[in-house]
Length: 433
Image (tube, rainbow, N blue to C red; front, side, top):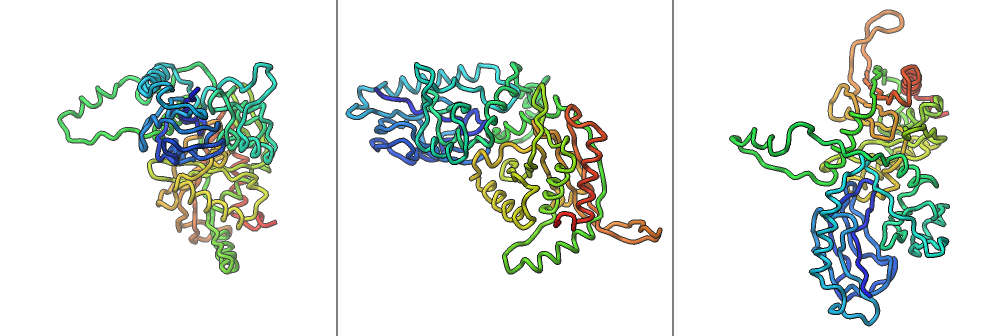
């Protein structure tokens, strides 16, 4: 009996994807774990692997096809000796896919960007867990219990992408339960339709640009953030002279190792250490509770073509400045190439958005749920200052704004957290001891 290969959900925010490239052709024999295709999600381009063995009987979706809904059939896999003529006719499968996509589009989506969990993979006796050999091996290496993972493969089978998306034993289960309110998605414009806006400008020349998956996700999540999270903002100016002097000395010593520290590396380290000093601020909002973390996992916004992504530096408080610099450069490079794996951009409890390199003096960043805070960083510029002895002088001053979720962080706690960040950056030797 033939098996439909379905468009997988390769990230928590994925609702549809682009089949960028087929890595197999009709008639090819495949085994579990073999690569079938490259699929573009809203965040990255990822490889999709087979979960069953058989022969590729029919490719139902053309290479380069866009907006293919998750769980829509994309190919037919035949069993040994089965002929494609005896399998489900391609037109029936395509019609089924179209109908499924239409039904899926008609359903009200949850406010959260997390997908609705599929049924738990289990056999009739309720004990067996279905997973590919590769997924089992990765889970064993990471110490992850397969019983807590929801499979996205055919018939609920756990595949590689499902395991890679797990960074902690409770990751997928908690996220799915917390982010499953039965509410409609936040519309981009509540009172004005797209047609009404177009009619307003019908006398003007313009080009209509369709929203890609990344832009849709950004619009949905940040609209949700501003409408549901009670933001408040704390602002401070930071004297960078000591940090810049230490950075120059460190870079001179590290040049032979190919390491060049940026101001952003110091900011990441300062935030990670500040969260250790103010542990009650190292939290995320989980609906009816807070999750307080032991480690400082820092998400850093990286601008990429068509949007942005926030790779996460885990255990940042433990890493040296040079280690953070190397890791951040690697993550940023692969983010721009859309080569990050889900576990590399999911999670974190705190985020940094730095627009200083674009000459922006200061700005207010929008919190990325379920995070409880984000630090907006402006440019360091020479400004007049009053010195301790009362005389006038100049210093390199950087303005920062801490956006906090008032449900999770009160004003006093936010002020203490920001003060720790400022103290570390104005006394950078504290980050070396």
